[in-house]
Length: 158
Image 1 (cartoon, one colour):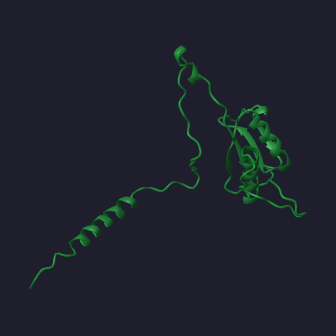
Image 2 (image 1 turned 180 degrees about the vertical axis):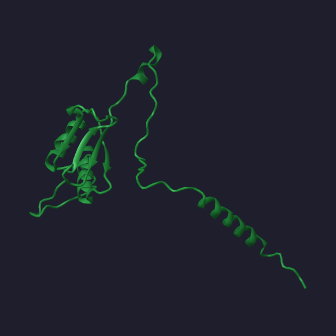
Image 3 (image 1 turned 60 degrees about the vertical axis):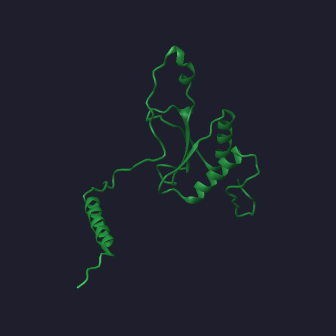
């Protein structure tokens, strides 16, 4: 009887796949109450030094958060200075309605600050797309259209 060694690689591959399956099954899954945020990273602060003056100047970072309208959030938009906690001054957090969004973003553009757009998991996509359209309208020269919306009256929005 003649032995064939032509398919030896197949047994090695299945052994490796089986070992990989065992190792992956041993990794515990995260509980449902843990949320992983991938949109930000905390960078440690470098202590100030006389020779490092250009590094000491920090640019502001703002977030445009999009929420689902509820009792907790009566309007879908919140513009907030990033990195601030529960003791946020009124000047660093603004709850915005749809009509207040364009003037608030224009004021930020005058200070050369572009906010990050952060939709909540349960927010409506129409609110997210409207915010993306307003950001594109404020920060582009008008040659591109990211989102073009129409009202019920047939007028086009940002």
